[in-house]
Amino acid sequence: MQIAVPKEIKNHEYRVALTPSGARELVGRGHAVTVQAGAGEGAGFHDAAYEAAGARLEADVAKVWGEAELILKVKEPQAEEVARLAKGQTLFTYLHLAAEETLTRGLMESGATCIAYETVTDRQGGLPLLAPMSTVAGRMAVQAGAHSLEKAQGGAGVLLPGVPGVAPAKVAVIGGGVVGENAARMALGLGAEVTVLDTSIPRLETLDDRYQGRMKTVFSTADAIDEAVRECDLIVGAVLIPGAAAPKLITREMLAEMKPGSVLVDVAIDQGGCFETSRPTTHAEPTYIVDGVVHYCVANMPGAVARTSTQALTNATLPFVRALADKGWRQALADDPHFTAGLNVHDGQVTYQAVAEAFGLEYIAPDKLLG
Ligand SMILES: NC(=O)c1ccc[n+]([C@@H]2O[C@H](COP(=O)([O-])OP(=O)(O)OC[C@H]3O[C@@H](n4cnc5c(N)ncnc54)[C@H](O)[C@@H]3O)[C@@H](O)[C@H]2O)c1
Image (cartoon, rainbow, N blue to C red; front, side, top):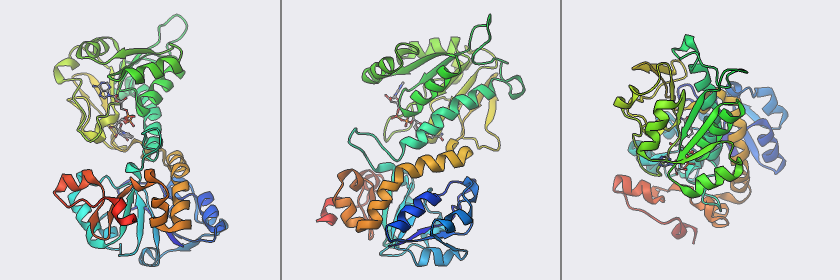
């Protein structure tokens, strides 16, 4: 199969959809891989490494897209990329269509088969192609929070682990899912005193069991959040209610209760944020201060660690890419109902129910297409 890896063109996106070792695997299975020149540079994967892996480098973006049967990307296609997509091609990437009507209609008009990373499921009911980025963001959240606590960043001048004779900082993580567990684990590793709040008892049980009581687990109520707000130096927002905007769990009035120079890291900012005073920021200017409280609200945290993120993402996507390349999309999906859940658009039809409902479009169940 002819596989193409274009260079990402979204602002400040440095990841790439295939590493040189991924390219080697695909070439070894008899596929032709074309990588746009410079596509991996931002993540530290140079053209020469792709060439050594047996991929072909192509400088002309029109040729990269035009000759491909399967196109691998990271971010949703931008307008000029949608215009390049054609009927008969398969696109495998993050899409997040339910909030993007123009993109949805553009993909329908292209006639291409579009499979979204974020809606592929697994046997445990998880989202295996979203989880790696949540893991990265959760781990980064504490790194960013620790930095923001420094005096020069507007923070209170507190060191997370403390030192002998000085108590460690208190960290609360609201939401103990993939992001929250990874944030809590980092904070624990740095020696902070960590509390995780979640509304799911099974989730709290898992964390309690896994960390043997080394982090406190608390059922998330308004009262419990009030207490965290009064006591903590760093609060990480990591809640998710699937398909809905994040609930505002810390209001502007509550900031007055916080210690001056304490820090809020709102990882849920990509779903609107779970603190009332959160607004999306970028890596160029990640923080701002409201009522003496430092806010870190970067919407694409994994972008800052493009190399690690690329490796984590491609580790997770490669088995699916292999299946698409070896069998073609129809058979690959027919063989795996969890992969079928990734199909969002095919030949002008919307095949993902939430996307169809969001825009009042007709929904065609993927099973009908797979026969
Ligand atoms: N900013 C970024 O760069 C970035 C990167 C990755 C993920 N995210 C976002 O981080 C958020 C969390 O993602 P995740 O993968 O950890 O989701 P997840 O589903 O694994 O975990 C979410 C957790 O929130 C809990 N929850 C729901 N309501 C709650 C409440 N009121 N109080 C406490 N807990 C509550 C759920 O029970 C669940 O355990 C999502 O919004 C996701 O989009 C952002």
